[in-house]
Length: 357
Image (cartoon, rainbow, N blue to C red; front, side, top):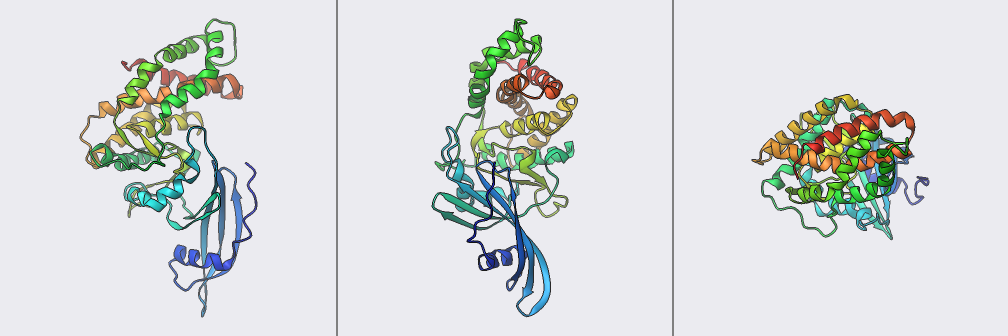
């Protein structure tokens, strides 16, 4: 995405109260500042602003500061027209304040609307993220997620805001990725095409495709909870010192809504294996660590269910949301990644074969 330069309406006067909030210095004055863009925002533009501030008008001492400005323009993700303003509304409604007790989120310093845009002035967060995350980091992320979701599974009322996503992600993923993948899978299964997955995995993936309606019915019967719905390593920062609160900071809530038990940890594990370089041969180890930590977090929040319920939900949802995607990636992406796709697909299909539906 081509990210434009910082809007010209931003100046030291606008920044002053934001810097004072970020530094906890009530008389701070902006001494200098600079900005840069981050070009990976999903539905908007993200800027990092940092600089120094004098501690007060009469004090020569200076303090460094840093802020994030997230500008989201009106944009309708197919089937999800509220996505562009959802994160703004989650902050405005106080819903993210409730979440932050057990799953940290960036502090909000100011929220504005400008015509067809929302502006969020946010804390700049730090920590381990992306491909640097280890199994221990994923374990912490799963536990904190469980602590957030467990209260809803234990009986707390799930928010009923109309702007929360209510899409059936598994159904959407099956249709979005499966429809273009099936033709190539049929050709591969009959030996007429060499691109993509090998014959035996193509046939196994087609068997999953044939079971999709029964498996989707099982997902529909899975308990509901508040879900992030984009819970992966690039949206997580693991704080190095979390003695005063949750270890996990979760960013980018524009997909959030009502999802199912284990939906988010299924995505987290799949993303780690497909996109973030986690060794496919350790798929079972990563999944087991995530499931156990997630179940522990659920119990911390008052959920009294059995861990086998979590395992079954995980083994149902993850293949539905990811097998057709990986099949399609194997048909269209860099062939150097094919061994990874094959190993991950074999693992996920094994999960699905163990599910009765």
